[in-house]
Image (cartoon, rainbow, N blue to C red; front, side, top):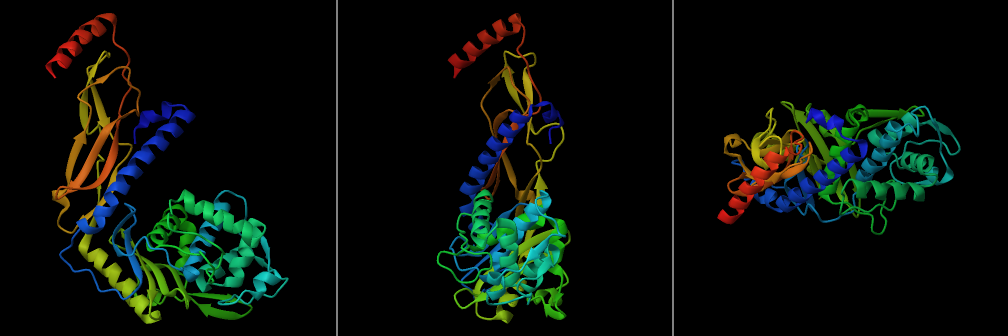
Length: 399
């Protein structure tokens, strides 16, 4: 990161980050369609018997391979990832506390499906309720949590859909906090993977709860339905789901050799097949691909000509290192290409957008990353401006 950015005003920083974020997002969106056909590994993709699936590498946020990744499907209890995400955000912002007393309303108590078996009218500590939604997938707990945070489940649903928009979940719409069947209640495999990554990155202290194998309330112990927690020590989350409409669903995440991947499977035939599918996808990801960090050189990546300034060169760099994914053994084949104007004119502000560096593999674009000025360049003196004005005219005539 450019240390001198600290000198910018608060508004300037916000504006700069917003513009650059939109620029990167646009480039990624353009490249995204190619990525899922581009990164052909030497290891064959496993056969997955499910309606949809997706495989996401967390450091880059890239969905590498998948099927029907942007098709919305009923997500069943995987919905509770968004329920949890809202609660985590509110806890982070100090709007609620883990020690809050959550009232179990009659509506929550009557909610069908998986339950924490809380008594109607009872008050349960928020941490206990939240863990129930994560570990045991209690629908009564999810409704009670939604009512506590949103004032009503309807109010909470509005928070869910707002958060989905902020996260860029384009194929998700929520109609309840539980995942029970409802018209237009749907998520895509990509959206589920992106939401899962957001939980892992933004709320690591709460993400630890997804690896807990059992939950007890009213002396009733229930077990996490994610069987991979018992079968693979590298797996530490996240969520299962099942309804007749959704089929058997599972989103799992694992860390091996400091790499983290997320696999999403929707609409599998049974519990065993959804677990096998996620395990196969995770094994494939770790064996077939390598996440790498690039563009982290100190002192800038390239230089550009400057006219009318106190110096005639400006160093360009990125706002920080970039994470990309390549097939195993292809790290040295990644190609960087700078796309700049032939020259720039002073004044130039630090952090000013100055072009793009494109990363590609086999002549196919992986990502566009904005280049910014690494320093401020002020106007030169009258003599410099006079001479450079002549030089510019000569240059323009030559072009």
